[in-house]
Image 1 (cartoon, rainbow, N blue to C red):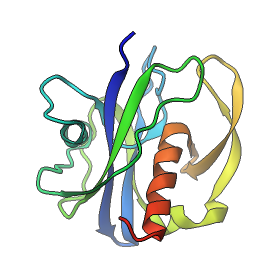
Image 2 (image 1 turned 90 degrees about the vertical axis):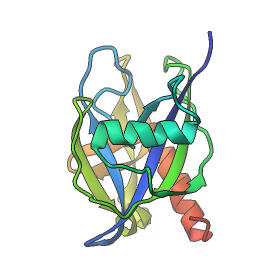
Image 3 (image 1 turned 180 degrees about the vertical axis):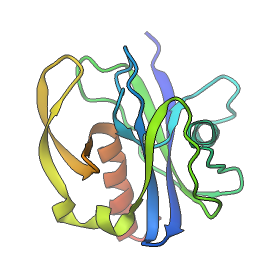
Length: 173
């Protein structure tokens, strides 16, 4: 089976709390393995996309109304794949964008919530905890997570943000 490709955007903007990153909560959809999850804007690579970076820009616009067309892509992070045995076979390419446009989010039907989270909050080691997470087959796992308004950010999104935050402490992004 051919591995599917996807791309997500780590959208960084200056807000009231300093630098902030955009996170979203996906709508609950039957059969979607990431249904209801906290995520970064993004989605599948389409044949019309010139690159995975372009896919991240397109999907962010489609899902949130945030237009990254004039934003600099300041980093490409490590491609991630799901670790769960029953997860879909997909590779997700994360790209970091410096955004300075309108921060109002216009959510598509794919999303139910969106927040600009202060990066300083994400950098607090005590903000990250091991949490029991219910996965789609009904079992539970222990996962490193961040709590956002009663929701758990974990899995692929946690791994991407962890690399992003580590790169910032090294001065790379």
